[in-house]
Length: 386
Ligand code: PLP
View (spheres, rainbow, N blue to C red):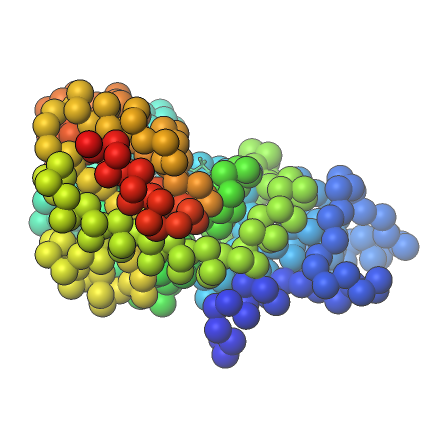
């Protein structure tokens, strides 16, 4: 991979177009015709790449997006899905059937899939917090298919050492998957650190505008391609219109995320100095517990940070309600800044004891930093805290 990430974001997966369009055109058609049975069989039997049927992912717009997605994560292959959960579920059903270990806090939908839905299919899940990592070797010795984790996690921004976990898992035949949604490929490349798969909720930074729902899976061709079967028959393929929209977003990924990194750092520093804030969790702060690891495995510290206000959950709710630029909405990675109070949104379903076990307090507010001016965002937080 000789080109830089920004170049790949713009140029990868932009096939030659006979009309001179610089970008892959949108083929909304569901099927594609062939000049002969022999030509059709070449595609059906995999001898030739080509378009065939959109739900199979064999649609030029989707294939162009997948080429770009692979290039963006530095992967040999990528598959695009209708959502992040579609990517995760197809991956787990393909490669996790012997069991899946989930490390640390993960997105609620992922936890629900692992803890209550996959077990109904006889797929065991082991949920370990970061403080319980010492239990991982024993579980690996029992034989599991996959170790899955987010890094940084939501909302405490806990970091896991990708290379170290890959070194632990691989001798036992377990594949390693990193949900790279929070970091984005601009800030972290888990495949280069030893992971076998990267999954994304492309709904977040890859899409970047809170206007599309999509997912992505990246890895080596021999591991990624078997996932196609589940995607195809569970009907999880991305729609061509969304594929084109996501490809457009990816062309600006680096400029968006680099700005979001910068602004998040400024906000983290301003919040650290604010009397109304008890704690700031951000991997870029030198006193953050995971800072050394972040410096080693991340290229930027991301646009997500969590502040803990002085006071209780009611105070945090009042601050969230008083914000004007930060919208109270449960997502992340878009051009507009968002705020959530984990105990009322992402972690609302957990008991207070379980939240405490995960280090999540009622006074925490999670911020997704958008592309507004840093000074305006800081002023918004200051007026809300006041
Ligand atoms: N992974 C992470 C880290 C998420 O935050 C989310 C959604 O919030 C998902 C996966 C699921 O993605 P989607 O909503 O695109 O299905």
